[in-house]
Each structure stands twice: as structure tokens, then as C-alpha cells.
View 1 (cartoon, one colour):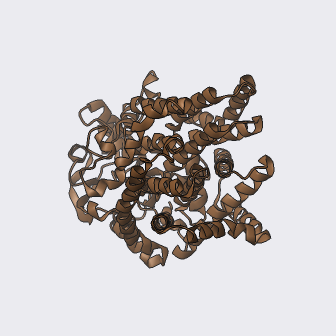
View 2 (tube, one colour; view 1 turned 90 degrees about the horizontal axis):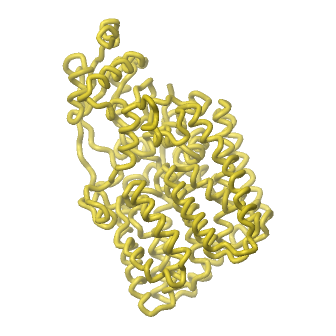
View 3 (tube, helix red, strand yellow; view 1 turned 180 degrees about the horizontal axis):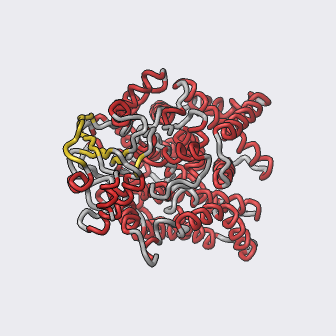
Length: 605
């Protein structure tokens, strides 16, 4: 077997290629979009970019579904995009550099206070860009957002082991990630999110004067949750930005043509194909569209186009899940089966009720019980939602759709900052239009800048921890050992165990396991108080031929007593690898031998 490490290339080259592909994809999408729709408005340019992401991810999904995915094919796609981008930039260098020249000229004419704000925002955005280029280290990315692409490249197919329950949540984001992994650029997802953030900020502030423009930029860049979402291969931020642009497009578009409505639908479907939760966002956007629709827009034609495009874009995902799990939205409908898997049911309950903070809702959106969890909050920026009742008078449709989104998230999704960030971004356009010229807006101006200043030290800490991975392979390895979830443990396992040893471990960092492993969800979500479930777990361990079981010192006593053969033959203490120095802890892991011989099989019977 191979692991994510086997796809690494030179660290500086990886960062350069990742940035090159992101810029090339943006240029190519923009060129095609302007050629088709004949408009250069920033909101349209953002839609073009997301439509380009849809085209790439949808194509890779079909290739993987057909069992034809390979490193060579993905290299062809990767380099074709880069060469197209180079061609577009070389054909008109002045046009390529013109956005930078315009921003530089604006910067030179700013007053001292605005200049200070602009420079602070620039420092933050450059910091975020550098963070997005660093090697992936977070648990989410290494659990399945990158582990699934590794398995797809091993098998040449999307038809993964269905016991890896987190893989069931895969969508278009993982297809973008597999393109990056195959080309030695596992950080591609975070760079895509960084470019999407730039497009979205440009669209949100396009109609504002320079003062409110800087304020909105500082407000968004200062949201602490970005520290977690942006340098991550999760693509949740991609979906949030995608729906925000759709919201802005519907809100501002007076004369919608059917072709532009199709573009809007495609981008909405792209977000829905990233993560189930964006289906809720899609419903809120449909409500907004219906409330804003002009009489000259034919609803039957729009409905027909929506149905056909949904069948085309999301159909392959739904068919795959139906064939593989008998549930097109697995694991949501597992409880409706005649004989549901209790482990899958607990897994769904876990992801639905997961909280990053021990603080109760809604206090967990603004407060944290530890500096190490600052990236799990929205900060005081969540207070902008308090203006919704005052926005209703002049933005009824927008306010109704935002309130629906908040209510739907509160009732049917995770009550965490990552999910509530979306309605905050949706609130920015009507809020800015209503209050940017009001005298009291200056309080929001000072608040936005203060929040950004509070976030800057955490960006700096992230760069201090992860930045060295950009410069050399040895420094990348050092960063992985210090900051990557489960990397040190996987290196230690390779040193202690035979190459052909099959393991069961509770470690979430599947991407770095280069040996056959047992899906950790069945170790964690099996009820140790139900003998029938423990019996099924033993049968699974026997069927997988597990030789060793790797368990933490605390929290897995029942699993140890049931499946470990005697005392551990080796134990080691590791520092908890984390990007945030305030989260530094230690934990101990032990390796036990397991019994998968005929005697173990007899017990399983």
C-alpha cells in the first residue's frame, strides 16, 4: 500500500505548482465565462470560477466512477490547465497584471487611516495565502479529505471500502483533492479556497466606496473560523463562498436571462455536491430567487432547467451512493433500513451533534474556553445577524432567506461556527447597502479593524508552525512530525511493525498509513455494552486479518480487554501534533497483538 507521503514531491516545487494550477484554473474559467456570457462583473467572474471547479470535479467523479482514474491521467489534466493558464497570461500580459496595477494605484491614493487598514488587510491575506500553501496537517484533512484520494489512486476507482464511514461524505471537494494528490500538491484544496475567498471579497465589495470596501474586507478576513477552514482540504469554505456569491448574484441581478440562470443553477449544484448541508443553502437560495423573480422570467422553464441540470450534475453522486450503500444520502437514512447498522447510525449522530467547543449554543459562536480553540468561533462578528430585523424593511427577500437558513441550520445541522458563518456572509450585502453611508457605521468600521488585529497574531503563529514546510523536504518532515495529526505515530508504527502487518487503530490520520488498516469508526462507534455488537466487531477484525491493535492509554479500555492479547509489547508517548501552540499536550499509545487465528475465529462463532 501507499500513503500520502508517497505522492510528495519537492516542497518548494509543490507550492509553486499548486499556486500555478489555482491561478491557471481561475484564468481559464474567467476566459471561457466572459466568452460565453459577455460580462466582466466581479460577481460573474466569481461564478465562472466556481463553474470551472464544477467542470473539473464532475469530470474526475465520472472518471473515478468508471474505474479509470490514474496518476498519469490526472497529470494530463493538471498540466493541460497550467499550460492553458500560461497561454492566456502570455497572450496579454498587460491584462493579466492590470488588476494588481489598479489596486496599487488605489493604495497610493489612500488617506493614512485607510492606508493602514489596507496594509493590515494585505498582510492578513498574504498570511492566509502562505498558510494555504503549507503542507496539510489537520485531522479532518488527513482523516478522509486526503485519505480517500490516496485510496482512489491505489484502486484506480471511486469504489472505496464502505466500512470507512467518513468516506461516505465525499463529494466534489475530494475530486479536486485527488487531482492535487496525484500531482504532489496535497494542499491544492486550501489554495482553491484562498482564490475563492479573493473572488468572493471582490464580488461583495464591487459596488462600495473604498472605505466600506476595506471595512467589509477586514470584517471577513478577521473572522476567527477562517483560521481553521482556509488552510484545510475540507472544502466547506469553498461551499460557503459559493453560496454567498449565488446569494449576491440573485440579490443584485435585475435582468436575468435563462443562460445566466443556468450558470447560477450549476454553481448552486456545485455547492450541494460538496457537502450535504449545502442542500439546505440551496433551498434558501431558491426561496430568495422566487421572491426576487421578475414577471419576465418563466418559472416552468427555470424549473425544467433546474431538474435537468440536477440530474446531470448530482445524478452520478446519487447513483453511486445508491449502488454502494443503498442510500443516496448515506448515512442520513440508515435508520429507515429494515436492518440498520447501529455503528452507521451512531456515526451519523456523531457528525450531526459534533461541537468544537464545550460552550453551549449560541455562546460557542462567540466565546471559547481556551486560546487553543480560537479558530472554532465566529467572534463578535456574529452580532451582525442582530441587524436582520432592521434590514427587513428594505431587503425583505434577502432577510427571509437568511432567517430560513439560520432556522434550518439550527434544526437540522451542526450548531457550530463553521455552519453559521454562511448566514453571516449572506448578511453582508444587505447590511452594507443599508448602513455603509450611515454615520453610526463608523462603529462597525472600528469593530472590524479591531477583530482583524486580534486575528493577526494567530495567523503569525500558524505561519511560524507550518511555514517552514514551504522551503525544503527536511523542514516539511519536521513540520509533519511536530504539527501533523497522527504523522509521528504512523512513522513509529512503521519502525515497530513488520511491513505486512495489518492494524486496527483509533488514529484518524488514515492518509499516512501505508499498510492495510481497519476502519477506525467501527472501533469507536461500536457499543462496548452490547455483546452482539462486540461479536460483530470481532468478526470484522477476523475478516480483515488484523494482527495488531493500536490503542490510546485512556478511553479504549473495553476494546483492549476484549481484543488485545496480553499486555502491550511496546508503548510510546507523543506530543499532540497541532498547528496551534496553545493546544500542546501529550498522549500515549500502545501496540497489542490480536488473535486472528482459528482459535479467534471459533470465539467469533
